[in-house]
Image (tube, rainbow, N blue to C red; front, side):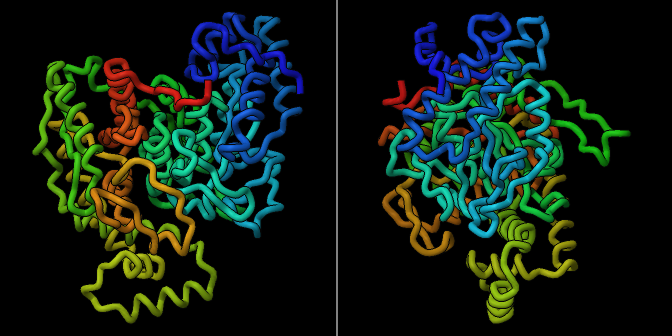
Amino acid sequence: MERAGEDIGSMGEALHFAPATELAARIRDKQVGCLELLDHFLGRAERFNPALNAIIWMDVEAARERARAADAALAKGEVWGPLHGVPMTVKESFNFAGSPTTWGLPAHRDNIPSDHATLVARKLAAGAVIFGKTNVPQHLADWQSFNAIYGTTNNPWNAERTPGGSSGGSAAALAAGLTGLEAGSDIGASIRNPAHYCGIFGHKPTYGLVPPRGQALPGSLAPSDISVVGPMARSAEDLDLSLSIVAGPDVLDEAGWQVALPPPRRERLRDFKVAVMPNDPNSEVQQSYQDRIVEVAEQLAKLGATVSFEARPEIDTYRAFQVYLLLLRAATSRQPDDEAFAEFRKVAEAADSGDEAYYTQMARGITSSHRDWLRLNNERTALRFQWQAFFQDWDLLLCPAAASSAWPHDQAGERYQRTIPVNGKRVPTTDQLFWAGFSGMAYLPSTVSPIGLDEEGLPLGLQAIAGHLQDRTSIAFARLLAQEIGGFQPPPGYD
């Protein structure tokens, strides 16, 4: 491997921690070459990735060939797009022609697609240089990132902690400065909780805004309920740029549809009207995390923003959580094989009608009939109208992205059997799905941005939920908030 970019970090602020927007600008201004920048990231991956295991596949020569072509194009005055020459990776679950898409499942070890996912194709069309793929949990179904093919990804802030999941490799690579930009997916906070655990920015778009085609296993063409794909980055500006690149109708709709997202509702922090929800009985939150959210809210109030700790949509949060769990498990019901499905049916049929334990709800959702789903979808739609009414008066709802900061690796048993420590108690990891589903089930956009560290020196992220198709409002808020409190900070030891 050529190592022309090894000393690139001497150019003022280390470019491996710079936003992709800055990388692109420096390339266009010819302050750094595309190949030079790629080699720098490759050198960092060689140095730091063995301990992190965030990037699990690379095609160095193909990436270097594209970077050379990007340099040659720029020398002739040609700019491919807003990401011209920016090195980036993508989550393993996205099709990138010539690379494996396994979702961490050994049965799909040899699945090598010949085409790109729609999101990947749009990033390439914008000029990105994709050089690798990042790790995921099996079936994308954990808030950790480990599987039998690629092993375990560690959190760059503490290697004994999870980086989150299912976009855990994406978040770890960004936080450690191994890639310029990333893309993830989210049905249960899979963009949002890794962003929170690793101290980066992540945006869950409004459902349907970004085509998910090609972020799937073989034979899956129909988009899944609740699930979205979206950007992950080291700045809110990168989220905004990435969203503008990947949003828009897929081929079945592009003849007659186009996207025209409204601009941010506010341009200054002091003009925002925000409701703050630092805790909920459905998922108790680490006290230091609650305290930090309250501190940020109080800081917003001092700046002149309208802040309420009481305002809420008129929604029963317990029932909303139950509806989410049932719809979530209905959406993932294709995953169990016939034998496992039969076992879930036995559990659902044997359960008492008042049994609303997580595993029981999981079994009910997986085995629900279409008639059941129609009833739940109607209930979900009523909740969506309640959210719409709330956002007539408020710009955002601010809340946690999870119950705590990153927790220790735990690969024993099944996800629903594991627990994590919260305020001196062991609680089910699945309780945290509340913070995923409160907005996710209702198809709403939400942006997670870093707000500092907890008492253990681990990152904390703030989730900003916005109204339907108000993606630019939550992203703009994250950008303005970062200017006030500092935004992304690199983990120690990755200079």
